[in-house]
Image (cartoon, rainbow, N blue to C red; front, side, top):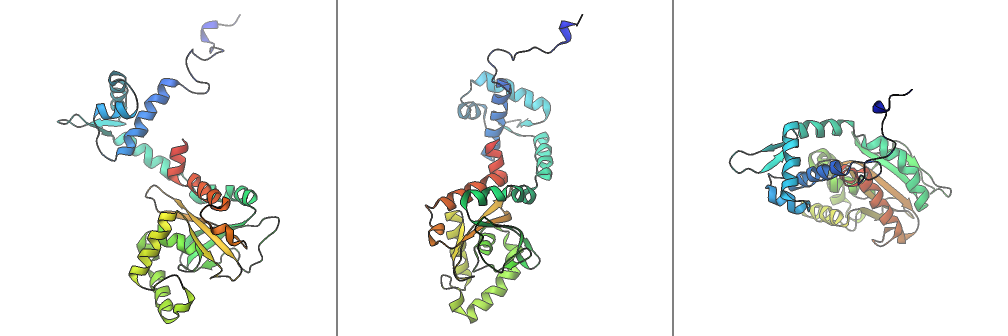
Length: 274
């Protein structure tokens, strides 16, 4: 005869959602809200923003302090993330593989949009294509794996211009700016000065994606969006290319699909989805 006391219950406790523990979900939501402040925060602020009674929020915080996830300042009494949370975050960051994860899911984006897609990273020679995904009706181009793309007049390069660390792209930017000053007709929408680059960068960041319309390869249009890390810097860039000028319009389905895809691959997107 089986020992009934050692068996797990067949049903979940009343009031708990399927697949989770309601009280734990609430406690972790408190941590997520705390992480969004960027500073120490009072108990009343946390309770208000979590829509939680003060006493309940205080109990959760006491448990987090005991676990090292939260610390409390002595004089102000405010709460902030503790060293345990830092260690946990660093461990998670070390396991997040932006490039491989994005490469694995790129075929689905291309199938949904009907556009050719590429994934690029910043290499020694600049923006370098490391994944090329063709659709049933592939775009004819000489580009392929290992192709390096210009910084200032390709959509991929412009996404790196807007979201890569400035020090990383500086050598390539200086080279292309010198070339653009000698040949101003090559980049008609850019004044080849530091101010012109700053304006272009701000425009791209405000839009959330970069685009070109046949300047790099005649007849082709492209849109590109960054895969961002925890510092809001580009780890990779996803680009869609086609022949229809409508693809680049802000209201197009392709732009919406690309930006949502890039957001989900980015660290900020995975945190929100979690």
